[in-house]
Length: 223
Image 1 (cartoon, rainbow, N blue to C red):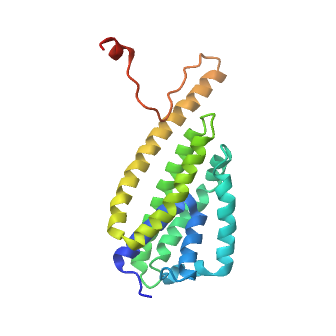
Image 2: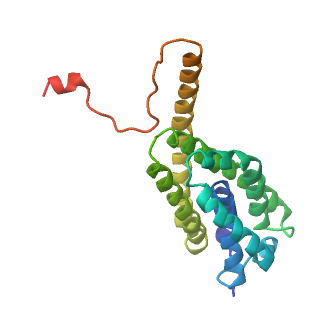
Image 3: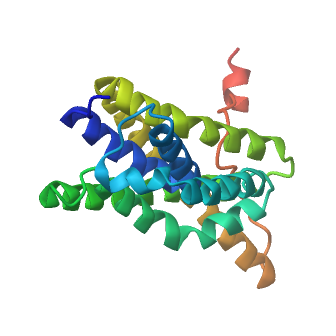
């Protein structure tokens, strides 16, 4: 089994860092299984993930997170708790791609991995918090299933087609920043609304975070 080349290592570090901000335990499980079954040559810093004990623990946490992430309200609480877990874990796993043999690259990977994990986690947490304001649970489950599928897809693409991964990854990062801005603006408006209600002021209402633009009445009058 040949080792990964530099583009694959860079892509894998980026994929692991970003995906750790979304599904940390699924990342650990998938990378560990890839090494355990020989699907992918694991770098030295990640070989511990293929240990049976680590596989069993990560598998159990994947099972718990799969259901916790699909219950409105509980998913946001889960994200809040994992704010202090996903980012440093993403940095550590990304650094493990290069290991102690390449200290400079490991440090760069740790910095980038932590930053990507923070970006992905923030986009996930704020978007899901905005979605949770909807009374129906289907959008919540749908968003969770999309996240479930994006993690293995990103890891596979990083190793199989690193160039394609970097292109798709750039698009995902731009989308993540856009989601953070939209969701944060919505949540800030929601907080201001609650504050005004409890202070006795009229309810100003709040614009949904995500909506399709409808034609105004003035536009209809010209038809």
